[in-house]
Amino acid sequence: DQQVKQNSPSLSVQEGRISILNCDYTNSMFDYFLWYKKYPAEGPTFLISISSIKDKNEDGRFTVFLNKSAKHLSLHIVPSQPGDSAVYFCAATSYQTGANNLFFGTGTRLTVIP
Amino acid sequence: ETGVTQSPTHLIKTRGQQVTLRCSSQSGHNTVSWYQQALGQGPQFIFQYYREEENGRGNFPPRFSGLQFPNYSSELNVNALELDDSALYLCASSLALVNNEQFFGPGTRLTVL
Image: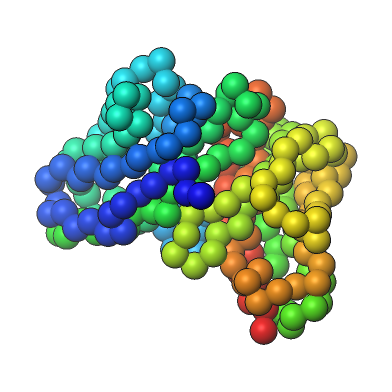
């Protein structure tokens, strides 16, 4: 049972444009959401997170939006750069149940074309 | 500051064998989590260790077991290997109570033939 879903396996964007990566979840107990970036032969690297008490969090070129009613979150990268090319994983956890594990989506491979 | 390290990088085993994977936590971190990432999938939580005790377990059978040592390093042991155990095994460390920010190692690629 996939509780976190990333329905787009891949996305290609021109350098300088906006990249929008989407994620849906089914478990209403999730109250903390994270995005990780993964390069080949490396482990996932934490990128940005958002608590369920917020609907937006920004960090430089990266912004995460959370729509709790739709159980949907998205990661916006503006402007996109070739170095952003990687696999992006959405993850979720629940502080109500201990937050001791992360539930990951299947990932979206972002390619930024120079 | 030393990041999370894992050994070995790659491993090939045959069905029925046993394997031990190792992880050293990031400096100052006392919590270790293990994840299995099958090809084309996201990481799946196996279990977590905090202060040398298991602190949560995912949907994995008992032949997946672990240890955490006083220096917070950790081992993942898998007995009676099956073909479906072929995957990338990721270790992540974090500070207790801040488990959301887990720092991952590069992983161990296990192939079961």
